[in-house]
Image (cartoon, rainbow, N blue to C red):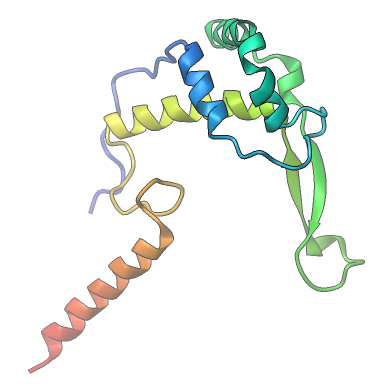
Length: 157
């Protein structure tokens, strides 16, 4: 069984972002009740988007053309989130990184390009479940149960 597809000879090319793509991505952001650490929430971004759209398009396209991500987009506020157990034990917390909405926007833009490239070249193993659209971990369990049933039914008289 082959888990990895052959090497892909093509390089991934990041196409430029368009104003329409940014509008689509931002429109899908949930209106969170609290702004991020930079005090700009998705609701505020939606309200001023058309006023700042062209500078955003320029900055993102320039960033991907030069390969330089603005330093302000590299900042995250890391907060501890309690999991379970003794609250005084640091091991019972997990980190959560709060990113700015502008970082989330750039991240989503890049995610779209990487996903398109991976799907176009069929890079992932067909049974790679989780972290993929239409490939949930529930489907992994169904696949496993189906395989067990096939083996079990083969043993029946």
